[in-house]
Image (cartoon, rainbow, N blue to C red; front, side):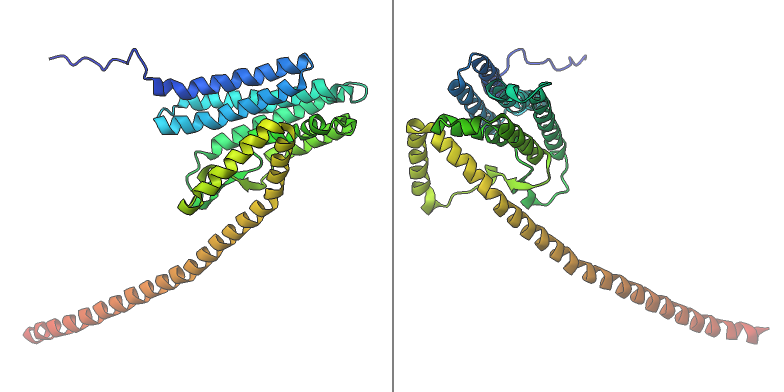
Length: 300
């Protein structure tokens, strides 16, 4: 009886496509931000990048919730992140102010540097996912600023300019230096908080929901001030994340140092026990041999 090979499903369930649909929406939103920047519609350009960040936040969670994660989706997500958070924000900055940065178009070098930093940051993140030797607590931290946060921080002075309508924040030199600094933070080893594993206590659910409602109201009424304050608050959390990471790392080192003497002490004890056992066996063998040999000698 011939066994037919298993046939591939011709139809995929919707839960396998939903995360990828969100990723495509993020990709289109990032591209649209560049189109708005070309047209000089700066508010819409920033809003499009914010929408791309929202879609990027949802696609991974939807994939885990619906069990629709796949290798294809992970690769598509990385490509979308590079365009939405590595190319689109710095291109918006370029059309807004960086193109005015002196002769020889050095502003374009800032675009290339920021995009390269984002690509390196994403490549490092993807390879770090395969490392299973790290302690569990490291999952609460990112290495460097994640690319969506980097995109938002790169646009900080542009957002402040939209909020207060000041030409100071439009300085090409200021924005170039700031974008390069954010790019460096993305590829650095500075630990930053990852809020994916945040757990809310039962008694804190209502206050958290109230805070989310107030935040949504602020975003609707004063979006630029609210976005700027959120980004400044995120920057302010970095020293606390560095301190928390160092404390946990010292705790791991102390635990390893405490276990090493116990392991070293166990080895000599095992060797001593083995030596005593060997000596005892040798003594018994000699005693047995002399007792057995005496009658033989007498027989001769």
